[in-house]
Image 1 (tube, rainbow, N blue to C red):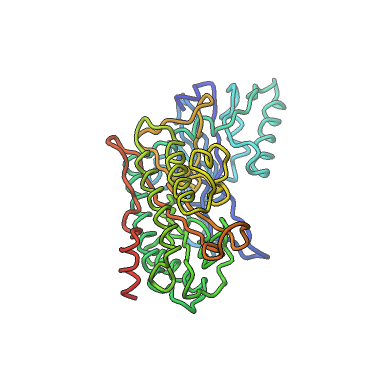
Image 2: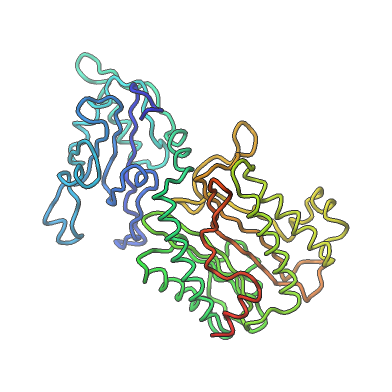
Length: 421
């Protein structure tokens, strides 16, 4: 509110319920920005932040308690408890918003909102503007809509101590799930059986999946966003698992790649060690004052040198980087912001330059090597191998903290874990 100024209003709507099919709804997930500002867990709500308002600056419109509705859908918070439980200054029934909110924003110069995100709320907002203009005597409607993300998303980029504590917990749950999945990833099993173990472990700890897990055996791991999860695991293949847990709307995102039969082949281990070295080099670049993309450049250097040494790329690493030929096998970036969203908000560049890392930021570090099964000019023994190693890394004052360190990733540690199945 201080950044917006006292001549502005800020309006944020809760996420609507979304239907999966017919009358079956998807599990409800609150809008990240709305949750960040309120912690309020229900749909059918609107937050109004009104800087300088004498009768309270933070106002929530939400459903009233209704025994008939609660009999079918469970207990609601209701307007009375919003102030005591969620720290609002005032609360009103959502059914009265059309009568109350226009007067609250009358005379303000700007409205900060997410215009264009939810058409139903956009229509409601335009209706409030029309109502103000039609008032007897001519109400003074705000003249400008401003993207709320310009203010809010930079705030979300810096995690507080409480947020980091939640993210450590989400990472710990996902780490347990990854280890549990490794124990059941045996030859002959289906990818969805491994996925089922991931989901079981995540739900047993009170979390939900942060995204649809990737469980990709063999050549399926070369498809970056593979989610079919139906193929059978074979003894000579690698298995790539990319999965995270979400706890109270905060996400983790971890990837590991293991040999299905419990031991790396020579080629698998050679590529795996390159990816692991690249990841460790990239993590070393996650520290205050370093550019966001320094981790990517460090990973690219290691991967290019490794692929040239193995003969998968011609020439030397400098040439492979300059010409971009390494992208045949490493087409992605090395990481992204992590927080309430798996690919979290926040600019990666400021004034055209890579953003410098600061304490409180959280990133993923996830280099990989992917050799498609039909890649021309590559010996058969390398084809169909896809490897990604991903950790969640928080920037702290003295360097970085790997939040997901509980999942083994050294080849010897992985083989030791798999030997105990």
